[in-house]
Image (tube, helix red, strand yellow):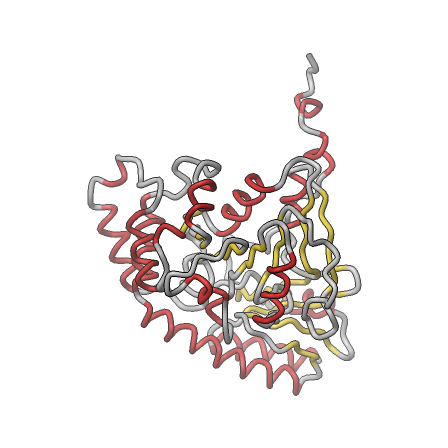
Length: 354
């Protein structure tokens, strides 16, 4: 037996490159515009629900493994069958469950690119192959999709880092072509003109589509860690076998249930973020930025004179964090839509820089 336990690890783990989250400073006065957090607090009902959970007997007991209370609340809020919902410890947990369930070792995962970098990490953990299909110049899907036989196809919509939206007819065309499931990753779906949730409303139960959602962005619960999937109930029953027994704790279940039940607060918060996003788009354009029109809570930009790395480093010196992102053939900075006061400070610094 080897004395070095590292030698006992699977080769695919040793060879993989770990996913790198955005910087999370733990102290100091920093304007965080790098990880697409909501600049506004969650619904007051969330705070009340957590306080009630802390003063009750719930922390002593295991949580509901299926999240029945949340699924019923989400059913009312979204107009879908509660049996079509799978709960997860953030949408990343949902993506992991789907990968474990559908992709065999040496199987095939496909994603459009540039997009969410975690998809590649999930493929490496599973010792699967990943193929990346470039978006068109207008950030749409290519007319000829080269991998209809994939075990799993990921489509972030709206996409990150671009913030762009693939239109519904293109999604339908792709879904009809694929052998395996099409996972529509809607982490930013509440900020967009349209999303795929309507496919599961009014009793519809499509077979080949899985929608993933997070409570981190529009519901302002990034610190809670809660996400969910929506799929045909027969598929959800199988995915429950794959998830950890208690993958969502009592506090996250209470918080998520309260948040999704307050759709009035959600819509008000989303409207404020979209208004600020529109203002950012115009002001950054005046400063010489090329800004991609966004359907998310962030903007993807480059500058006509300054490199993305220069902008990222200079903003960091001013205690403003944005995300420097590099993909083959694409490099830029992704700026989260912050509060109006945060964006005022960002624009003030950028005016001096550029």
